[in-house]
Length: 426
Image (cartoon, rainbow, N blue to C red; front, side, top):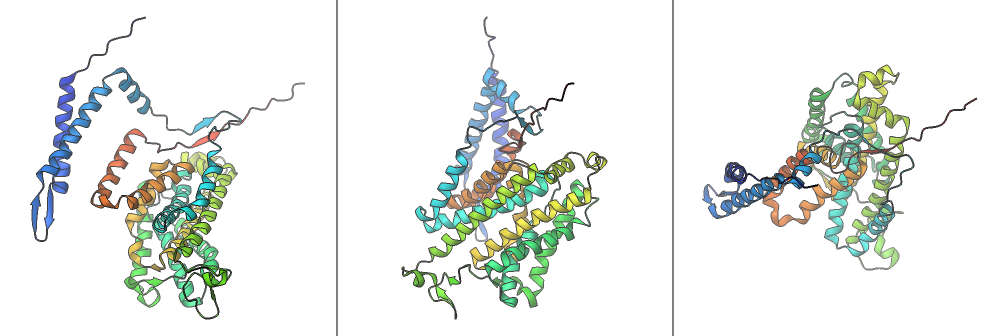
């Protein structure tokens, strides 16, 4: 059987490349081709030319490839509208299940083999994993678009700082308390928006996040406004990770008779944060298999059908908001103790957008996807500081490409099918 010969229209490919080059010139010209120098500016035509030529070459190669049989098959595969949950066969066991224990072992070894800088970057990545997991419950599972999730993050961080400043509460005391307070604020936000959907819900939650930030900025008597507040370091059975401990405490290094190092603090924060992240991952996995998790997904797919089945949509929505908010509060506590200082500039709308991008790019409802996306979007920019001028540009391009080729995110949400039971035949 002879294969059909695929003819390639090179004229069309050249036209596509020229159009892509013109668009690149329009987009990158004001950003890359002109460099500000005080009140003046300098033209950089050579750098702009290389970018335009690279875009044209890439578009020409892509156009030619997509006219081949393999390219057509690739386009067909990625243009399919299979947007449902991927259901696996009953009793399915992943061939990659050994990766989870291996990853945990490597994670436990990281603080002892990595440098202090790498360790701080990984801590930041784990904090965003917590934030992504919390928002994934609200957006990915329950389908409630929340653009003000950074507000719960701020509540957790300032909860630790205020608890230490006014009540003398430390890290371990405020860790559960901040999660509870954030959950209460999640319920307060959830009640007024029970009847809202889509864009209207997004606008209300966006306003909630901005209200929290403005209150922290302007209530100077309590929060010290833009000046920020100090946050306490964690302690290990009363031992502090300082060169000289405060009155009534013993420094960690003196108790164990080892030389002082500021890395001990980050190692301890990392290990505690890792245990909390693993705990949240386990709880989330269990919740998705419980009736409450199924109720979240039913609410996401069709609220009217969800209510017609007798599910209390009020409790379902509030539970999603509260559990997601409590996870954000936990992340805020770790961020505050990691930084040792908090101020309102750390909790802007851009943070909410970044957390939402983690959920969308990772995969709506997918736990593994959120973990991968959190590290890609937070750790990679820190490790690529040499390209700091292009980080936001690369971030935008990544989002555009992902929405075109992977609208369901990096990892699709999967479910294991239920084996059909045979009835009793008399």
